[in-house]
Length: 428
Image 1 (cartoon, rainbow, N blue to C red):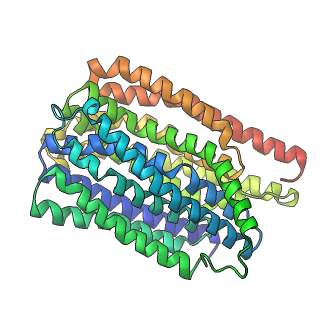
Image 2 (cartoon, rainbow, N blue to C red):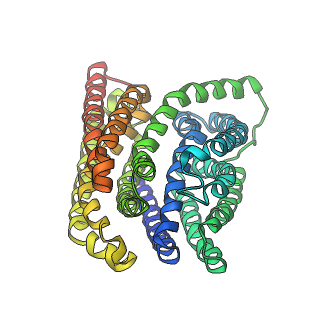
Image 3 (tube, rainbow, N blue to C red):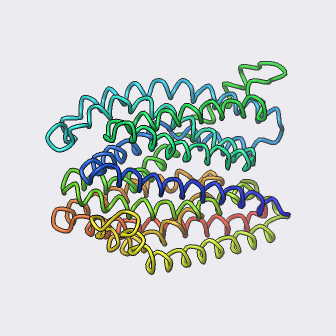
């Protein structure tokens, strides 16, 4: 069995279980809490998700790319050691900094008049950011080492933990204030598991000689490439969450709740495409002249597979999602069915762009799309300000889709140019 099939299978299984557990988690929260409590949690979580990407600082993805380009096991050890040290230091600093800023700004974000539990949730945000930064670091490192079996195990542990501990804590006390306890407990277990794998399978710190100049060199490279990855990561977070956040500020709790249900299903569907892309993209990090024809054919084949998967999922969403939303969530969330049908167009754009974006990252082209991400965010914010006050969740859906069109065209064009350049140069 080819490495692509094995990697993709583990990656897809991980995303499939993750999607299932998140879907069940969302239903549990919506069912146990009332609409107002559910809306308050998803509003806070939209803010928290954007902070997660800031907490990553681009270090996770940068470490993954550089490890994948290392030629020897010893180089990988040094690169991993450098990335881990940066991760520890930055996670502590950024978590403290963000919780302080967020607590001060809580009054501007809707506390206490609209979101009475917001400050309580904010108090836990630093711990959640810390654990999340390591969870994502482990995932990126496992991808770089092509250890997709461990990636699968970590993903299942993470999302099952969210579901399991949420049920326990909400059964004890059905209030939104219990949600951070569930996420912190799961995050701690994932932290321990990931550390065990890094120490015993990735040989973290197991260097024959501690050449600090080499560690410093890799640290500098990681930080240098982390800058564009940070911009890209924050851009992705803002594009995903800015609509929920702006709905929370400019519209009602009901609009926040129904939009989040639709957005959650769409974003989880996109994880399938991400899994397919991740399973094959490490093989395109280095493309030698003799490999060009074979790898360019592979790239086209994988991109077509990704597109047809997106098309199939889109048809399923349009036909069945509105009915399933009412069945699982309840009639009070029926508007989410209309919202998700509109977001299908965004899903097709986003799921296709994921494939080309990952290719650009592995080809050191993150700088190229970082600038356009900023432009896309500005467009999205402007459109949200125009559409949300009058159309609510429907307006947010339209704004998100329209704003993403230029970005999709851009990444497709840049990817094509990269292949043409490789063809002319004859090697990478």
